[in-house]
Image (cartoon, rainbow, N blue to C red; front, side, top):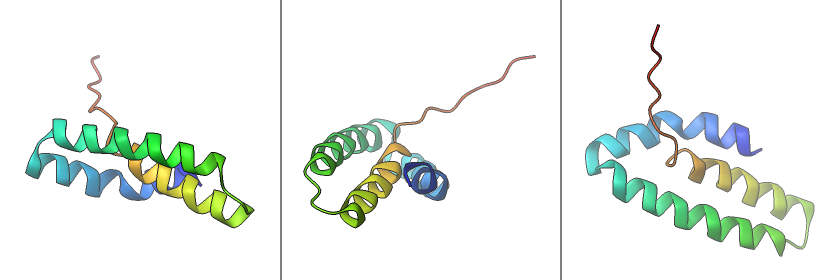
Length: 71
């Protein structure tokens, strides 16, 4: 579920980072990811756990850097 959330939110997160800047997006994503992981440890059902993990994947999209490949 985390990978699906990450894959679906990479492009919107990058557009948001271009608009408001990378640092605010990365700081917000880091706080959200930490909060969602703590909340996932207290999930009382499997459905809640899956929801929190997918939201965690969405938050992770704001933490990825742009990679440059050199040949």
